Image 1 (cartoon, helix red, strand yellow):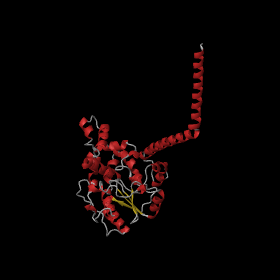
Image 2 (cartoon, one colour):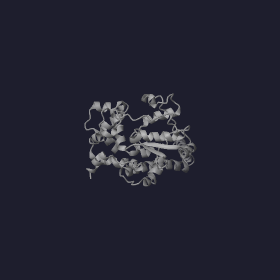
Image 3 (cartoon, one colour):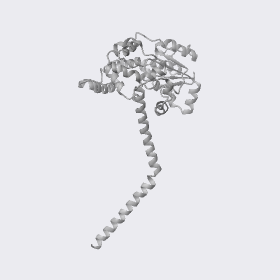
Length: 337
């Protein structure tokens, strides 16, 4: 071996030694055990949360909870909901010291109007003079939510303010969502969801139907809800009991949409603002307002097995707010026994 070859080999050996030493130094000093531990812990925590969500999804769908206390003491409440953005449905008003849980499809549009009047954001005392379009465009971000505040300020308001919520039969609310989002003018805004549903649940759908995302059938929508993880639900059909945190928040008043006029008056009287604003009376001539009368017509269009699966999913709402299944639907369920 000539002198040059020896020098090349020697240089290569030194370079390899230097690289190995440098690599080991990086491994020991930069990627320290603490760093590995943090990374693994963070990763494991995400896995555990995902696993718990899956477990809770199964528990909810299997109707595991028989009392509100059982649910409130379960890991699903203490751990899963802690990791979901909290308080993002709770509107507050410092002037009149109240907190309202704004639940979609429970008279929420009219309540937004009332809240806008009380906030002083609109120059009127008549809620109906605030158009629906402006409610969801110009004034959509005008109401303050608890989620925007520091925890200390949230805790103070939860302790000292009057807290109220309006609820509704969950299966009636589900139908109302379908009629409003997939049959009304809103159907164009929901075409992406419609495309997903039609592609997954329609047998041999046409290319036009998939492309447009329009014309979702009620049976297809229900199949989509039944098969989806509960914690992934859109807020329009997400359980009220998940959105409103009733295990943590003790509401001073729980109103019902079917008695909205009287219950809203009770709330506004208590707040001392009845002379400033009135809740708009329900317009029963509205195309989809009286959803109760449509329950039998639409739920007869779905397989009974899907109705049987829906009840356990939304049982938490029945449980947490002392609601009862509408007799029309209960009669249908009795046929499955």
